[in-house]
Length: 230
Image 1: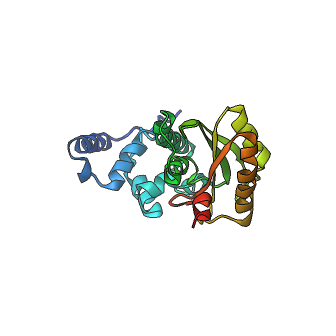
Image 2: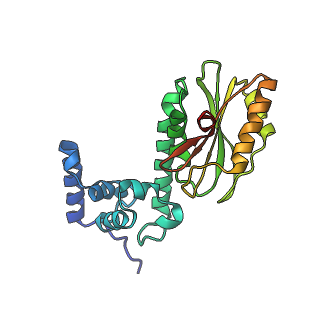
Image 3: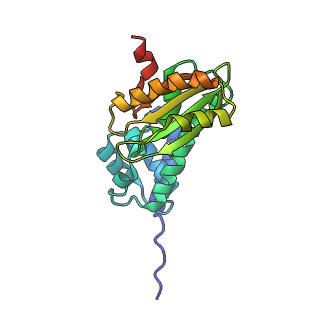
């Protein structure tokens, strides 16, 4: 005899609907774990998600901690499986594109912080070092935001030729190089500084402006170009 799939108990369905109504009427009165509970309900439609929501808040400290947790950490939580991990990836990509949306509407990249906000949404919690390029026109408006290379846990190999070729291919005027430090320290290595100096020397020879090299973590950023002016 084939067992029938377990349905969500009527009491759980009623509880979830009451949560939705509370969120609509008075969102700030809904606890963090309850917001997470509702979110989990879109991935686990037939289960009571309150215990898992509380477990995630307890383990990661907050909604942000749960959303920013790495896949291997999430999968260690009982009840958090591949289906929810797929939902988390969609949420992460949505957040990254939301952060870049205004800049893709030709806003000016005027400060390292503007670049960092866009980069942190995509790279802040990445377990690997990644190098991205923000390519801008003559008015420093974003033309392209693209990954140049993905590396390992502790390093990513970046060559000046690859950076300059990408800018010339896109017919960009200016270059902002961005990479992340998964370890949480945004301070540049000696190799980071040498790469920056080499690009500052080579870019003008090719009619390009090398504007900055920004390093990001999940909560901080470092502008090598700004540090050179101090």
